[in-house]
Length: 256
Image: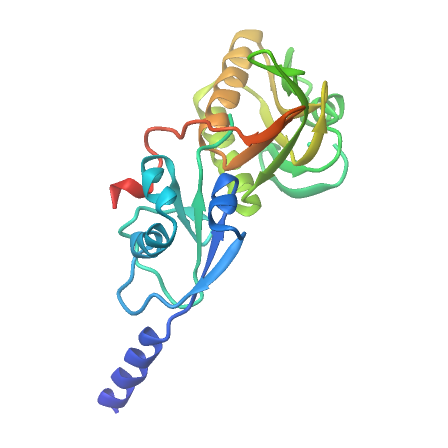
């Protein structure tokens, strides 16, 4: 019986299949948004990345800035993969109230979401406010009409939705624990945005203004370096994926 079970296990390892996702500029490099691969037994996330880096050398060149994920969680290259896993390659992040594409509201009243509709910051603030709060700080990132003097027509935002909203929630809870605030909300908009529209909002309520300001600043700074959201900027004479920079602790592919 044991030998039969071992044989079945080895057979399953041999025919292990994983789904691979490409985001942002990596989607353009690979020429597709997703693929399926049979990496074989004992394969790691780094093994999967190396397979595609051989097919698309540009991935190898960018390895020090590509972050890896397994099943909607950041993952070091050495992480072993299993049959049915979802592996994602994430380029540097590019540092929306209506219907939310994804949302998390925890028991403390913090709120994190992705939307393709206009971000209603006043509605979010009203949602967060408690009777003991004496300050509301609202940061909004807005689409501007140029980049280094080059006229911008509009932006397109995309993200790894499940990982993005979970990462925002993790950041927000850490900030709430570190500052004397009441509640925090983070909302990022996806899809096409016109000049003057808000792409991201961080709202903080607190009994006093200083911790509210500090928490909001930390929130947007960390969001832009860790949350997997990418933007493509469209100009009169072309378009480009905006390259940002990952947080120094992110599990980049080059560490494989």
